[in-house]
Amino acid sequence: MNQVTPGCAVLMCVVFGVSAAGKLGGGRWRAFMASTGLLRLLPPSLRTWAAGAVVVAEPAIAAALAGAVVLGDPLAEVAGFAGAAALLMVFTGAIVMSLRRGDRTPCRCFGAGATPLGWPHVMRNAVLLIVAGVGLAGAAAGGAPQPGAALVSGVAGGAFGLLLVRFDDLVDLFRPATRVGDGVRGNR
Image 1 (cartoon, helix red, strand yellow):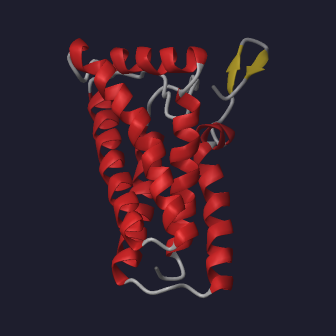
Image 2 (cartoon, helix red, strand yellow):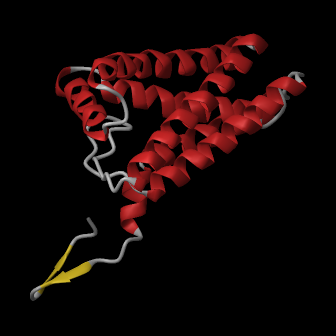
């Protein structure tokens, strides 16, 4: 584990932990299931299985990376980053296929979001794939980080992870407002 790897691990823990929590409970699970059906990427018989696999994989990745940070477990670290990269590639491929078909189903990445899928989601996933790659490279390099550097890296990773969780809102902040009649309409 090098100096940057703890930050990458904490960032991924935040993103995958919030994502899993956002899909569980009450109407959030149903909304997530409905969004997988609207994407039409899989036959109906596989959609429930795929959605369930996502809800199992996301907390497993977060737990593996949390174990790597807290316990210094190099095997959990490699498994967590590799799992994150694999799942992000699947998500990114699904988003790109949907966008090419003109499908703008709302993103349920973190639960009950209403933002339609778009290229910003691909960009966010590309950033996350880079973080997973950097983390995996750091894990492969081995070694223990300095405690102070690990703390700073972890705090920075957590903060950046929270920004990525709220990515849709951040993108909306920079979208120009559109005029409707005499009033100004919001960014969405």
